[in-house]
Image (cartoon, rainbow, N blue to C red):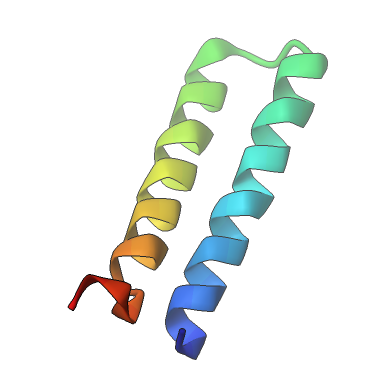
Length: 54
């Protein structure tokens, strides 16, 4: 597990926490969807960069 994959996974988890917070604050759905897309992209990039796939 290298540094970049760790950073991407941590950022993705941080954005997931933001989604939870935005839902509790009843923010607009467009903002929640945008943050959710960013979290999914960050988490998937971090997981795909792990060395367990090769």
